[in-house]
Image (cartoon, rainbow, N blue to C red; front, side):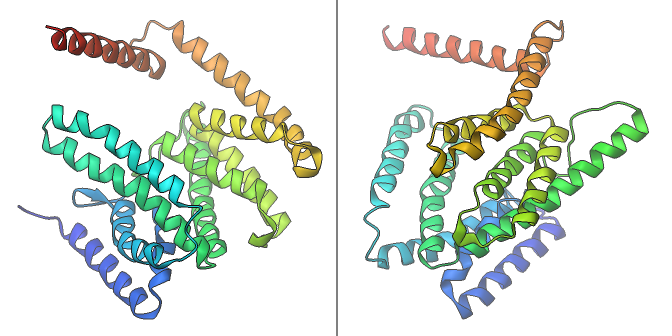
Length: 292
């Protein structure tokens, strides 16, 4: 099997970086998993983000098992394990190698992500990890805004922004997380308020440039839930932002209605409705086959 030289170089670089960090402090390696989620470049069969998470998983699990105050995390870990066990019948009934690999992939993402996050927070590295994530997200946001402006100048029209290796929904959802972090910013993060507000504006503009409706709805749902809180718990601030988010909901509804009225069977709304119908049809066929 021929492996591209770029893949080999990425693997070697990640391996050397991991060894260097492990030689200083094993708890620092899980911190890298946070900004690594932004790197969708392929490293062979997996992305760099998956590779870094896999490397960070071992020290995270070791530190998690060694920690004596993990009682609050155990219910989440048990819930994640229950979720994985519910997937086992599907894996057994559909014996494909890709299904088996995806089962382990989901296991690493769900339980591994929980372990990595807990270890980072318990070790006192949450501020650094989240700062790295937000800084990386700001870079993606700036690139998305520039790409959108170039599209507007060159074509005279507005369209959804895609970046190399980054789908519009990845851009939107990534920046939705960053936007909410910058907005909530608990005191222990010690982030500068002016920089945080500037970052929120940059993320909001880039989410709009991506055209990711799911990201817009995600932000709206979180803000709406927080708006139900009492004013002393941040509810008042959420209500002000909720008014602005209502404009994005109006845009999403208009966009969905516009695509439903199109004759194009390949737009995103029509495709998802078709996939939903296909899933129901497969489920009905499977149920009929099982009942004989």
